[in-house]
Image 1 (cartoon, rainbow, N blue to C red):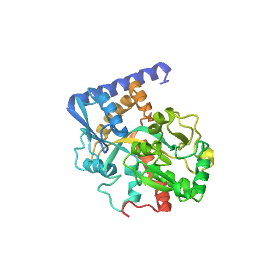
Image 2: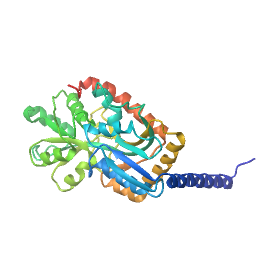
Image 3: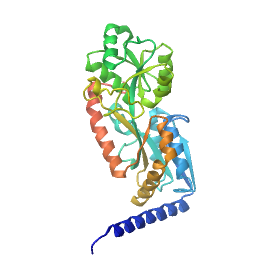
Image 4: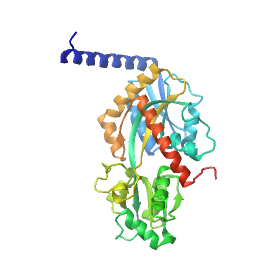
Length: 328
């Protein structure tokens, strides 16, 4: 039989209808969905979870709530998944680092980053930025100029990041090593506390998510010298990337992903994946994440698994070369 455009459109419509029916069936069978994040209310991870939960309420489940299990840099939330039901009533949202980098910096974790979680969908992607405050002369406008200033002022050659062992921490360290500078790291509990010290003149520079800097840059309180993406960041298009400024192999991005506990069936994963794709494509969710410098993006479970595998394999050698251990 020859397939016409009309047949294909009818088939696509039927598939969409079946997916919608399946999603509605889940909404009727699941009383409440718990979205678990390893970070406190008010932060980026929490904000994403709440926006997504609002969209899943009444579509995927009758009710959807966010549970903040903060502590140990996001480990507690993942550990909590090990004992959770795998019936689609509990979902984890986590940044890549807890699954892709932590296995390289901790000798022992309270969870298996592969066996204890089931990939469902990507949630968003974002780049990192490197900014300087009033401690650094206004003439310094690029990464090479900042590194030259550090060479001339070794006593002030340091930077802050949201946490030891985080991607922003490693970005700053690799940046210094690229030109033979011991750029000292100052760990904070979150990016904003580090930025406040920077704009207050107590810290020269901060490495962190681009979205954390935008309001301070707009207010003229700090200067964004570079971004970490493979291409220019859509939220800071006038700022050159690290690679554009001569730092080879310094293209880094991170992402947040959604996971179910081990043992979740394919049907459960696919139903939640369909609901998440719809939620993450909603205009208000896309716009809401954009205000935080995040690009809303969904994926198939297989695509999320492949992304994690690639990041895990990339960061292993980098962490070994840096020589950092969270157990030290």
